[in-house]
Image (cartoon, rainbow, N blue to C red; front, side):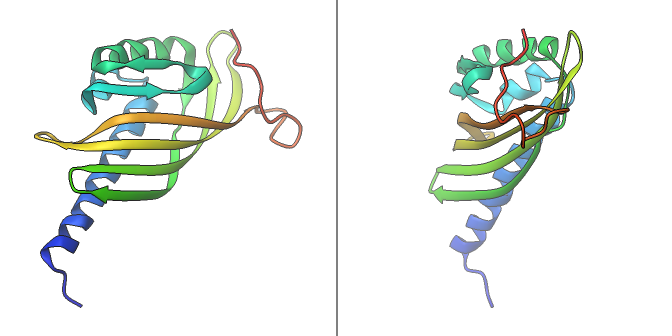
Length: 156
């Protein structure tokens, strides 16, 4: 089986977007590195985390993540099942998230499950996030588990 140029470019684009998402999760899990995270987004990007917050523009996203480490003590973003669709210099992606985490100020542990719905654009610096939307599916106290509590209020 031979790969023509178009199919090869499609494979390269898919892999570059997977690497972008990996860099995002690594920066989140390393104390929410705001400068690293901001550079993964376009200047006019949106990060919409639902009940967790909302930020517009690269600088707004930088500010949002600069505060995230004041709220979240520990997190591991386990993303899986990417479904990525490429359309020339734009793309969309859906991912599952399962994230063990703690909240500072009591260090209460939670399971967070969600789906990411992303849009990407190809820039001179490579693929970047244009819009990240988090669709929460479960925010469950660790001790209770999904069977007893599906959605809990974010501790203040």
